[in-house]
Image (tube, rainbow, N blue to C red; front, side):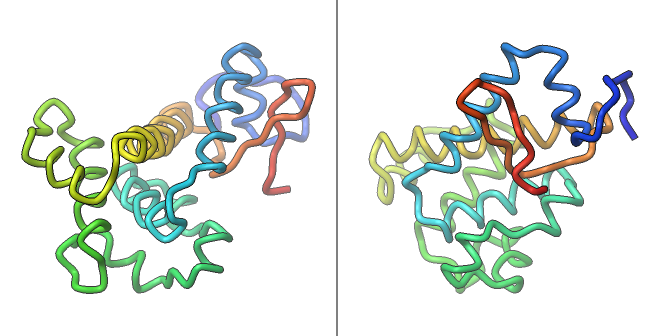
Length: 169
């Protein structure tokens, strides 16, 4: 149940909340679209998304699976293991990305040059920017919805008019 008054309507609460500030809705929709069009491998994307979900304690995100990741063979066992990046099922790149996601979400001021150097062993600068923004999207939107008590959805999209729409309907 929403912790703020929302407009009437049949839309998801998150869409109603964003409708209160259309310029922010456009920004959120654009950011979401960029994340969905990410060039990161979908396995890596889903592992990182799930690591953020465990930190945010987002019940919807914990129970939901990105269709492209499922198609890529990501299993529930893989996702359950994201809190242990040392698990041998993860590649070295996945391990450092999971560690980075956890540190970004919980202790970003103390991400040191050593962690950045380990990321750079597996990701070029553009990929590091992309990985950071993918993590930031899931962290920010998960907390936005959690704190305001909004129903949660992991994907929003924009219409050509710039309106946010529910892609889970």
